Image 1 (tube, rainbow, N blue to C red):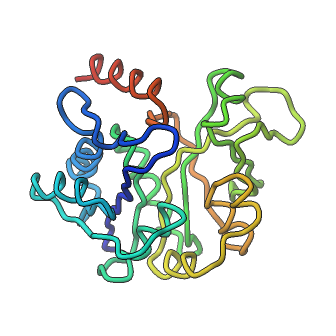
Image 2: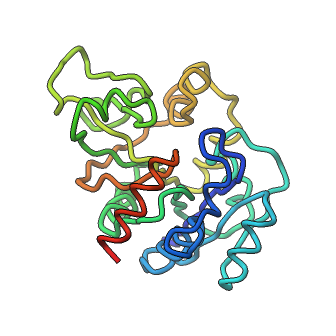
Length: 240
């Protein structure tokens, strides 16, 4: 299977504008994410997909592959679908541009899920460390069925009525798709649950596209706020 990584990237973040070009130890966040994906050796090709010339130019300065978006998109998944239509591949992994520290084992497990021909789309989840994390709307929660297929993604705590911290699953926002599934997904209208939670995974669920959730130990660092950026700096200083 030809497997590629597509990294959607834009500068217009509401919570932390221009975060992708802020420098972590001298290197822009989006460049770190791109290089992490490239150096993982998990992908046949890695592209950054953006409508912003500044981001495109940063990646090209590293001789990286880019795709310039021609349309305005509601989500990162819709953005990469535009590129996926024009790139030869079997499996595409949607890596978040604001998550520069890639866990190779986690992504390898995600890709391996497609060895099961019934899997059309998959994603990652992990446990929470505290109830403060659970109550933070920036940390997405996901409930699953007995087969670890996603039931619902939420920014509010959901745990089937249980208060045990182990009953909560934290979504790691990395999706993987078969090419046809991604293109079909992008043609669907945004669902009510997607709009209410601002989480595109709910569009798949609402349209009966199963999402196989892979449980991992790695939490990752998603840079959604300036506080997250500080945490990323601390992580980098300890793991450089």
